[in-house]
Image 1 (spheres, rainbow, N blue to C red):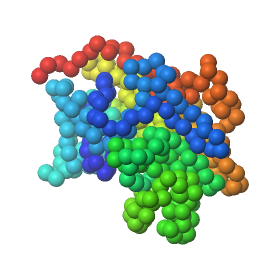
Image 2 (image 1 turned 90 degrees about the vertical axis):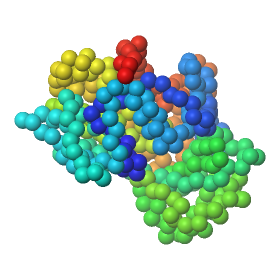
Image 3 (image 1 turned 60 degrees about the horizontal axis):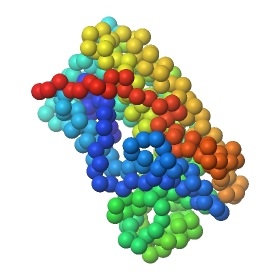
Image 4 (image 1 turned 90 degrees about the horizontal axis):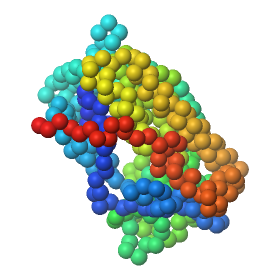
Length: 361
């Protein structure tokens, strides 16, 4: 959930059981463009019924989550709500108090799940501070129209001397992420909008007929992010999941996968204790134990790639993937390993009770 969407899901654990195809663009290959082309991730070879990545606007994904959650009889959605306090009962979190357009109220629960993102309000209220795991990265996001005769890949990483541009295809537009080291946005802005447009064309000359549509800095959104992780993902009665527990770097685009894996393992561990009304702190610790090791591995890899990027930018050298990874991508028996990480995670997680269904209303 994000502040922009102003939606808070309260008092329930939401587990994504299925994805609905909304008609948005999907891609089966991820390519990195250097002096030659490296196929970083070919998802079509993975053993799954859905061998592609779907690009879905967050608003539609949230609508899907709400539609799935509404199948559960006790689900309640409060729109425009802002959590203001934790309901503490002798050191045990028993819910939250919130403010909304109609004045606000309280939601009481045996377990409060904080899935409110990298700027988690609940994390601040719990006085928990994440530990930094990497330096910062800056990503300038912007969009340009997509033309019927465009032949660029649906997903690609194009590399220049001082920046990298991630290209993601949507049905009618391209979403582009201009990646650079800390301070790159300030530098780009000082050089001026025309210099920024030209730096884009240096890497993506096929956008020459539309780059002028970037009219001002308001057309560009800055995302500055660094990897971080809570030392402890829980307090009695309170559990943190996703970015609220561990902020991932954009490298590999695995943040949503990690968050869903957190939710799956939380469901596996907590379904029975919740049913019995006996959730203990050891159950919450078990969720962290199952997920923390894989999160550490991914964050460590992301930090290493980021360090290589920054070193390349500062030296003026062209960034390239680590040699071992480039070799793996050329060996038929091993080349499916890299796409498995963004697709399934380091270790694939599954619902242990997939046969369970919501109780009929």
